[in-house]
Length: 499
Image (cartoon, rainbow, N blue to C red):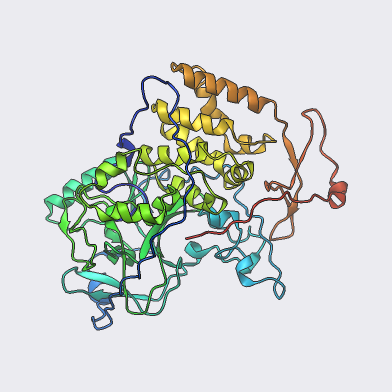
């Protein structure tokens, strides 16, 4: 039962958001603050709990449910990704013997797909068989097994050392809509089932691994987890995976934070045994993942203050003064984009968009656009059509983005959402939409220079430096001129997936 974003037990799509002051119809933006150097020393990591003495219980565990290798979908419409409009091919190239292996869409590469949690597709990636970004498709699972614990039932154990950000296992089950999710919750409660295995996949869609699923369902909760849950796009489907949050030692139990990722029934006593244990799992207990805190720009001192007070967490989450808004740094861009993709809570989306709004550096805004930012904004507008404050903030962000061509606008289909707001009953939304529409209409469509695909065929590209701008009435250059065109990539800031 996991979700890499929504709060447990309640649908995050109904989360409330603090309204701005009635004195102004525009979304409030706190002044940006710079993070000063931390004066506190980093705390030593807590000792890990090893469970190498526990017996393997795979056969017994597998008898408690029906194992599946892939998700089952309630209908063909379930689990579909809404992020397939913009080009899904990365710009990576790899030459064996010349390049380091990670260059082929690996960890810490500049692969646009990997940075936006999209898998490259076999036969389409130009790195061919060397591509390292097809882990779901190839079922590149970590070496793990199922054990029987003393108080927590079955659990997962690492049978070897696991490096940080390693894909451990896919969370597999029945993908159902909100109506069936709620009905199954009632049915399971009536049947006396105490342990539910629901994970939110995306808005109004859930993975139910209670009776059918994969062994990822046996990952237990911890208030100091060594794993996290990530939402990835594979082809036209969204899927969920369990990943290593840090380097994991052999014989550690594999855990994640249910209070971030899991949907249950009533609060249960927590048996994680960690010094900072909050005492309960599920119910009204809610925490923010470390990745979300980093995406919000919360520094180490803020994190320590946030985690130190169990009683005041709910209040602090709603307090605009608790998390000072800081502009986005270049190495934080992937974190912010990933957090926006993972989280549909209006409250969290509002805070993340506020960080984007106060960021003025054009190079960082270009990076946001490069990581399919327009598609992301289209989905935010679509999901929050009745939220005036969030819509206003999203439009204010878009107006500042340094677009030079219409290509990404057309690929993302964001204008369909913009056009809906041209006749908004809210004057500010209508004014911003009209201004943005006029601004985008001045842009010309750039001609994409075809480049070689994995099979050597010419394909269209959407990279920032493979677009040549032509007037609306101009014709593209003939195919015979392709080899003579040489473009120099602009100075884009480098960035890595800094976890």
